[in-house]
Image (cartoon, rainbow, N blue to C red; front, side, top):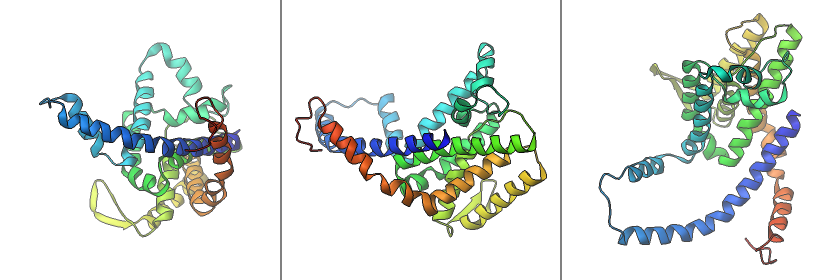
Amino acid sequence: TRSQFTGCSFGGAAIWQYESLKSRVQSYFDDVKADWLEKIRPQKQGDLRKQVNQWWNSLSDGQKTVTGIIAANALVFCCWRVPSLQRSMLKYFTSDPSSKALCWPMLLSTFSHYSLFHMGANMYVLWSFSSSIVNMMGKEQFMALYLSAGVISTFVSYVSKTAMGRFGPSLGASGAIMAVLAAVCTKMPEAKLAIIFLPMYTFTAGNALKAIVALDTAGLILGWRFFDHAAHLGGALFGIWYIIYGHELIWKNREPLVKMWHDFRSRGPGAGGNGSI
């Protein structure tokens, strides 16, 4: 199931990228027209919509991409506060190998936080690395990596809990975020990082990744229960693997799928049968 989901994630990302490139040409002409209309239209002072647009346009592509992820996490966080939803939240938004529901929680628990601090910390790290990861991969490949890492890290957690006989619910985006962090640190090991509360102390991304992997490995072996160290480790190892091997094996071989999608779209209604983008 996890391999099928990963394949669908990256396949969907390839098609998404194709559609984005196709629409970018049309968007260019739409933007030219919009700019012309903006110049001749009377300007409103203190327009809230204009201020929101200015804020949105000031964000990087990475920050714009993860805004949707953060909003989804915030929505799920609010759902945890609704008493009538508690049973469904426990069933589908926490991952536990002893639960009757196994597949959907592998994905949905990635967007689930019960603690505000837990969600805030995870979303801060995701926001901090968003520009770097999207500049590296593009938003489509990043989303495929993020969703796949969420499922794979949960699967590793399932295997660990079953092997050790320590069942219990887990939730949070940490596994997926660890994959993002590991991917950036593997790609740019000499980049300088710092802890938010100790900005005067800096260290390289490569050393940070080694320390995180070592800590989670120790936590897994010693049976620490505060974090789901297996999920963290699974996410980190997937991020490392993807940068070293996965990008070449998966993303660079997307052309046949994109060509097939292009041919399908070209034969669709209104395409004119000319196959042009």
